[in-house]
Image (tube, rainbow, N blue to C red):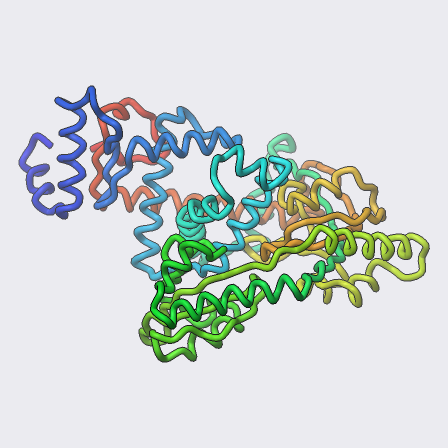
Length: 460
């Protein structure tokens, strides 16, 4: 910023950006010895702190994530690119629902519990309660989903024809063809352990108590949400933000959209996630801003044991050929997503659905069971958490296993199509990010001046 052009650029900056720059300059010079944290990048009006970089480094180490090139350069660049996507998502009014966020958080926490061995061991290891973990993960998962949806929107118009796929791979040497990893097709039967009526009544009584306390003016809805709600929105006092009807499950939306008095608390609402009470904050056009408290009844160990015993009996009858796995799935499974498919699981991919899963794409609990099974074998019953965050009991059948092999156009057309499609999409994303950088104010700490970045234009 030593020429007239740079001085003119500074005048156009917002007060927030100028503050971040001055803050960074101040703490990187005279007060360098006492710095606890500092701004290392500025992207438009957004700052990236050194603590943000260190936090991502720690998280990557815990999850075994590797970065392209030098992590010291790749990590802040990745954060910066995410901020570009989030900024565009806000402009384009991209939204994610609280149910999407809650489902992702529940799956992450359940995976941690499985790795730690128990809920108690996980809390001991992380030195946090599970509720605190949910609260801490909320914004991270929201941003992750926003970025995913923004990326999908940017490339939604890209299509490839069969002739383009054949032309692309026509002259590729055999040793350059992609390797298709082992894939499996899995059928599943699930049953949800019954929750004792006493447990349901306990939860409802607690919600009624909350309602009475709010109505008597003893406390606020938001305070009780922060203290007791088992949803990621608890950290915001249960507030969900302006949301369209279609982004909430129907049972919740029907009540929330019919509320008219912000001083009133709704009746108890049961959804697939648990039991809620809701309070209206505001209505704006076809969107509602509401807050809620979610409580989830606990499944007892004895109920899980009964569910596993019941499914083991069904599995034994299938092995004895009293009926087929397909019939058990059609008439005895609680999983509405697979019941109509005779138990066959489907994997959602960018351009549709497929019954083939790579092992790493299967839910962790299922992959662990399927890994050692033979084709046609029916598993013993086991406990798992489904995509809605509910504890269920399950049995699976390995329907098919396609061993890893070099892709060929006749058997793996979809795989080859995805290679071409992903290449075109990545090219568009690369161009979008590069163009976005050119139109965004960027300031980088001198520590990163020698970095080799993935995208061009960060340094000017």
